Structures are given as structure tokens and as C-alpha cells.
Length: 251
Ligand code: 13P
Image (cartoon, rainbow, N blue to C red; front, top):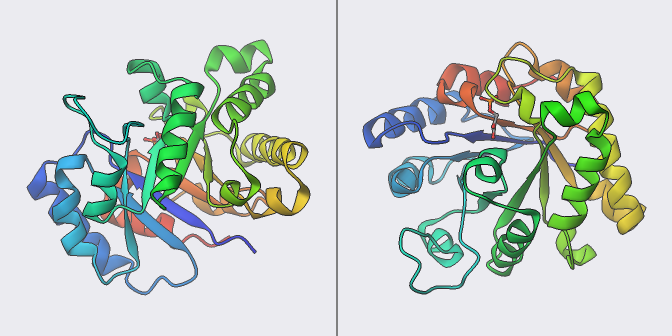
């Protein structure tokens, strides 16, 4: 059985006071949740304050990015060690916004992945096709290329520590969710690729989240699909009530 994993990606929203209020509200709303993992990813500058609020709760702390170098003269960057030392246990890697605006590639994501694993944090590796890819019928090719590129030289022992997030770029922040069937099709494809690259037992253990306009109104149907193991939520994670409802999905 794969433990469902629900995450809030706060992106570049919420100043320190807003982040603290949201974390407090959330803590009160999801305190009784037991059978699923939950983490929230505030901006780097809000991590410490949010950590203090969610400590001793079932909400874990995540980061939205990391640098792949150990340390050094990289102005403006944040290392995996720094994240670990502040209490981060999950790190989102290769979000489509980072691929689109900050030149991230499967190769740099692979380096970040190895660094995050070396610090015993859980990486969330994001993949997803553009609208043009889908319309051209090349979704499967794009996803396979991203999966193989991001996971190069990752051992089966490490693979099972990784969470994969399927986020079709056309569904992010657009209100256009992939239908549960469309999402399931790609999730099954990803699991199939992991099975052929590794083996069945390993591929069955990897959790695959769906992300892209997840809302209280569509989470239950998405979570009913056999290969959908959680959600990576953007906009709806900025509203405590909405995120709490998503965390409490009935699937
Ligand atoms: P939305 O939920 O706002 O579509 O964002 C999804 C996302 O990018 C999560 O990482």
C-alpha cells in the first residue's frame, strides 16, 4: 500500500505574516488526519517561521527548489544542507515554472535529485507536457524523456524514496484540470516506465502525485484512480479551508 501524499506549493505567495496565519489555520484544520502524509512548501524566507508553527504536528515542511552544489560562491542560492538544517524534509525539483523561467533541465534536476537524496530528504520530481505536446500527440514521448533524464543513475533503493509529480503544464493555474482518466493514463505510463527501467516491485512502491488545478471539487475523483497517490496543489493550497478539504479527500 502506498501512503497518499498531499502537498501545498505556495510558490511566490505569502509574506511572513500571511504565511504564519495560513500555517496556523491549516494546523487547526488538519490536526486529526492520520493515514496520509501532508507537507507545505512556503518560500525560503518563511520556512523557519512556518516550521515553528507546524512542529509537533503531522504537517511536514517542504522547499520549492535547491541548488545542486554542496556549498560555495553561488550568490542567491540555497543548499540542500541549509534546507535540511532548517527542518525541511521534502524538496520539489524541476517544477515546470522552474523549467520554463529558470532554465532547469532534466540534467540539472538529476543533479539536484542526487544531492537531496544524499541529505536524506524526499525529492518530488516534477514532469509534465506542454499543451503543444499534447495536441501533437507526443505526451508519452515527452514524459518518458523527462523520467529517464531525471532518474539517470538512480538506484532502485533510491527510487523508492522519490515521489514523482505529474503536472501537465496546460493544467497549472488555468482551472483546466486533467480529467481523472487523462491523469490516470499518464500515471500508469510513468509506472510502466519505472517497471521497465527497474522492476515491478520497485515501480509499485513509488508514489505519483497529480498536480494542476486540484480543487476540493475534483480531488475525490482523482484519488479514486489506482495510480494516483496524491496531489501537488498550487492555488488551492493558499486557502486553508480548501487545502484542508483536499487533504481530507475521500478516495
Ligand atoms: P495549481 O494548483 O495552481 O494549478 O498549481 C499546480 C502546481 O503547479 C503545483 O505545483
